[in-house]
Amino acid sequence: MTERSSLVQEVGAALRDHGITAAITALIGGTIALLAAVSRRAFTNDAMLSRLDRELLAERTRVDRQRAEDRKGDADRLERIETDIRAMRDLMFEAFQRGRSD
Image (cartoon, rainbow, N blue to C red):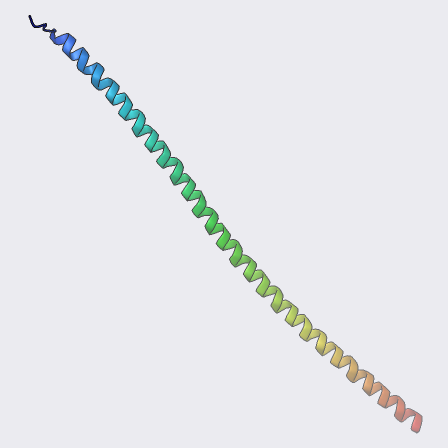
C-alpha cells in the first residue's frame, strides 16, 4: 500500500524544505554582502589614506621649496647688507685718512 499525503502536507513539506534552503541562501548571501561592504569600505579608506598621503607629500614639498626660496632671499639680502657695510667702512676710513693728512 502506498501512503499518500494530503496537499496541505505536501505544501508544508515544500515550504519547510525550501524555507530552510532560502534561509541558508539568505544567510550566505547576507554574509557575502556584508563582506563586500566591509572590504569596499576598507579599500575606500585605503584609497582615501593614499590620497591624503599624496596631498601631504605635495604640501610638504611646496613648503620646503618655499623655505628654500626664502632662505636664498635672506642670504642675498644679508650679502647686500654686508657689502654696503664694507663700502661704508672703506668710505669712512678714506675720509678719516684724508682728514688726518690735511
